[in-house]
Image 1: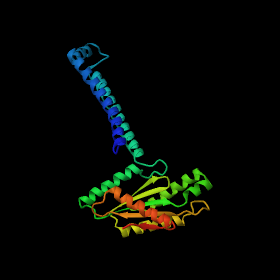
Image 2 (image 1 turned 90 degrees about the vertical axis):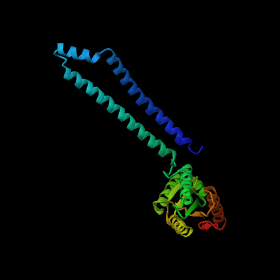
Image 3 (image 1 turned 45 degrees about the horizontal axis):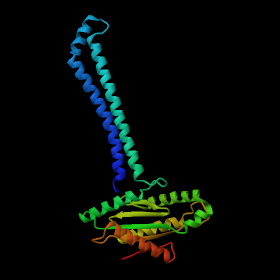
Image 4 (image 1 turned 30 degrees about the vertical axis):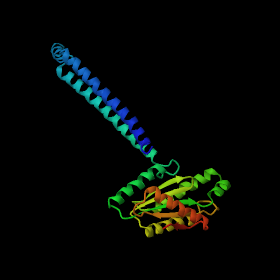
Length: 251
């Protein structure tokens, strides 16, 4: 199921592109073959010599114009299909509410970082799992529309905190996941505290206080991406049970 969405998109796009291109080429080949078989070009030449309204150069101009027009529309269609492919791929890897990466995309990011670790291109990787504290109470008090606005604003806060190499995703509901390739545990802890304090200080246009609990896990040799996620989840559980609004890490 890992590449199902991407493969489906590619099949749809490639099928439409292939159909358009094959049809255009086939029509031109068939037309050219028939005209050549019937000596149509010689006939056009003779016809143009006997009819002053249709000179040979005018026929050539007409033929050239039709060819350019066909090519123009074909390339425009291909460009439109490529843009559609890019949009569909973007939708397939982003969360519709926040515009962040979705769960599937961040799994790909994490596994790609692990591949780089195994090749020796990276020496560290950390993961942060965040959960907004008492978010159900906020939803009950202000309603789900306000809750959605808070989720979107939190997403922007997290994006403003991370570096260029870090990836942020909405993990589900009020949970977020941050993958930090090349960040050690100490560096990831600094980032986690920055996120926690940024959310704690923000008012979010309401009187209800908002805080976040964060579980931190760092890669060690032999760990899979799922292993890292499980450790981050356990660390988040610890943060929740020990009073919330804090960062916890499991060694």
